[in-house]
Amino acid sequence: MADNYLERRMDDLRNGRLQQSNKIQASVSQRKGYLSVNFPMRRVLVTGGANGIGLAVTRAFLKAGCKVAVMDIDREKGEKLAHDEGVRFYNVDLADKDALEKALDNLFSAWKDLDIVVSNAGISTFQPLTEGDPEIFDRIIDTNLRPAYLIARAWAIHRKQFPIPNTFGGRMICISSTRHIQSEEGTEGYSASKGGIASLTHSLMMSLSPYGITVNCISPGWIHTGDPEGLSEIDHLQHPSRRVGTPQDIARLCIFLSLPDNDFINGADIPVDGGMTRKMIYQ
Image 1 (cartoon, rainbow, N blue to C red):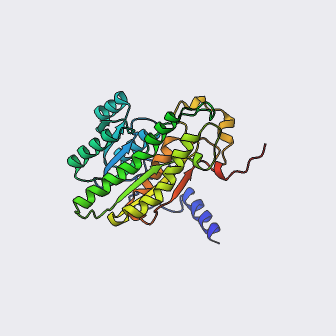
Image 2: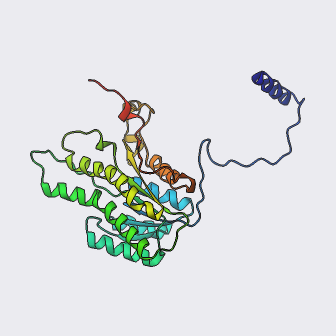
Image 3: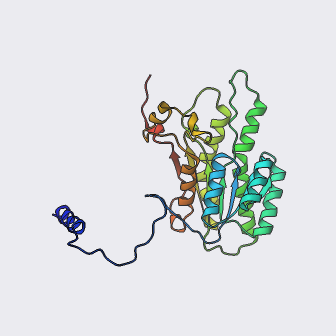
């Protein structure tokens, strides 16, 4: 009955038998399904924020009205981002513990506190197990895994020393990978580092709980950061979602997890992979 009623009303409208309302309608400038978010002045740190997924995350928070600090080893792109888009840039090799802690001290001094941390930086060096260099394995762990721990530790120490209540609490979002639950040969260092991130997430959830900080993990699948023209139809259609992922897919989830009311999402590992880790494949 309801469907028929609506059909008749639309027919009346088309044929001039019903006048349109003169009420002002909210303008919609974005495409259907687009979520536009404006935060209060949140203070956001994004590691590896000058390239790829990190750059998309950086820009998403800037667009949402946040102050964003970026730590990245890429000086050229980081300085350009600072000049063009107003981020606070630290040229840091995150595997260098002393350099990372010095940058964090500077940031806490400048901003007094952080509201959101996206621990994203990582390297994906693959090497055959029989020919691999253990020092490269260590480098991957020191770049991909240890910085998340060091940042969380510094954040907790800062809040413990300066216990001014932050009514928002905080959000820490760690970027892992679906490779921590599925792998190819030669990915030991990368898989171990990302598995460590997933496990570290729920440990940090407990340790940062007294400070009101939630900790969640995002595990991207195939996220294409290059020219989309380089992808084939097979690349897209093998995914149940029928497309390869984009950095914006991860950035949107970071924004969602950072919404004030989403503090009940805590300790989660959220795959963003177009359904590939749930797809049964036999060859």
